[in-house]
Image 1: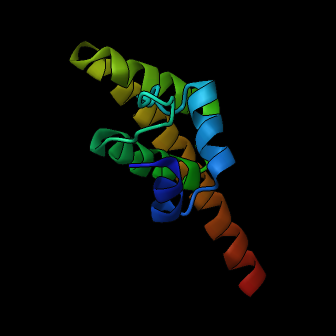
Image 2: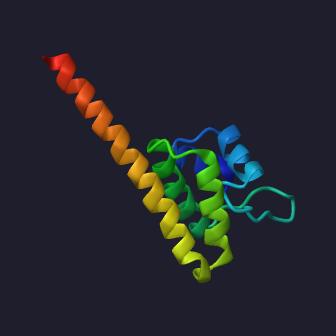
Image 3: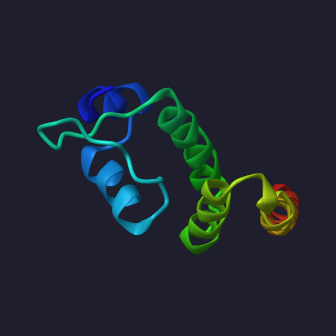
Amino acid sequence: MKIIDVSKKFNIPLDTLRYYERIGVLPTVKRDEKQRRNYTAKDCKALKFIQTMVKAQVPLESLIDYMHLFCAGDTTKKARKAIIQEETGKLKKRIKAIETAVEKLEK
């Protein structure tokens, strides 16, 4: 799939897709003979995951670490799980803080 198609499908700006690849959030996307990015189904699945993490405000550093581990294979499952658990814990604390703030504002 071409980058323009991926951009439209996931509603991600072209520059953001290139940025994700440049900083290592998205594993290197294969290129065709003219050096145009050719996104595979696996790349698209990774982008769905990345979008979820970005929406959850997971820091890019954690996301980069996770994706590098993911690309390294199944032997990294434990380390990946630890990253997810840590970020989930942080997210739950943020949710609790927001709920508390909402309760106070409603009073």
